[in-house]
Length: 166
Image (cartoon, rainbow, N blue to C red; front, side, top):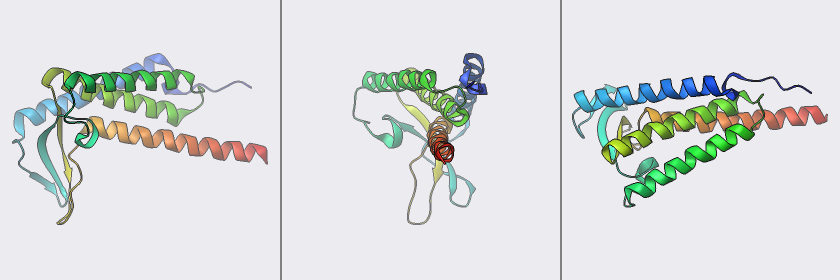
C-alpha cells in the first residue's frame, strides 16, 4: 500500500514553514520590545491585553531558577526529539507533521530569545476580574497548537484504524 506524502512530511516545505514562523515570531517580538511599555497592560479588547514581560524559565515560567544553559539544552533536546518523531512518522499523517513543524518553530523562536537576551519576550495576556492566564507569545501559541494538531492526528488515526478493523 502506497502512502500519500503530505506537505509537511517533506524537508523543504517544513523548513520554509519553520523559517517563516520563526521570522514572524521574532519580528513581532522586535515590535513588542520597541513599542510596548514594560509590565503595563495595553487593552486590546475585553479580557485581552498586550503586556510585555520577560520569562526566565520555560512554559509558564517553570524552571525560572535554573541556569540559562540548562534551559537552552532542554529546548535543543525538545527540537531534536521532535525532529526524530517527524522522521519516524508515516508520510500520510498531515496533522502530525504540521504539529511537529509548529512545535519546532515555537521552540526555536523562544530559543533565539533565550540566546540573545537570556529570557523570552512574552506579551499576550488573557484575564478576567478574578483570574489571569500566564503571559505568552506567538512561539508559545505555535507549540500549543502544534501539540493539539498531534493529538488530533492520533485521534483521527485511531478512528481510521478502528474503521479498518470493522
